[in-house]
Length: 137
Image (cartoon, rainbow, N blue to C red; front, top):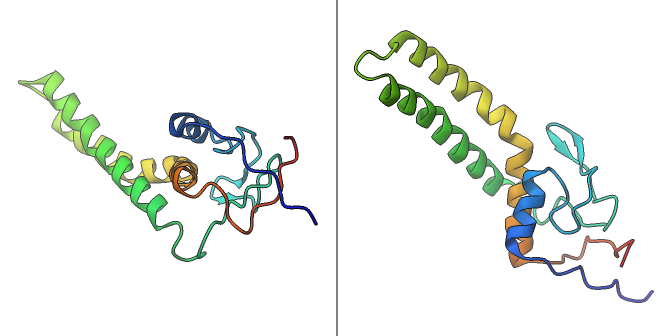
């Protein structure tokens, strides 16, 4: 069996832009989400293995992305609201908003954190043994 062709080269910015659109960071194809909380095994277009590395340890970076970005927004949005409404901010509404954001943002951001982590990983390790050959060179 001949070796698979090298993956297409793209900049880190392109990979992250594709990840924010929930597309394969390597080729830009859609269809990498099996469900909101689970990625497909491989990209349907380029064959990129979406479970890269150790199954239990690989996604720790995605959890950090999710926690950091979700919680920064959950505290940042209420702070901005308080600053804009000063000197009489609606404290009860701000507290409710902060609590709702702390719960909802990690859920909403979950697939984005995974694709962003995948883009980060691809910037350093463009191919792995589990990757399939490119369907469209």
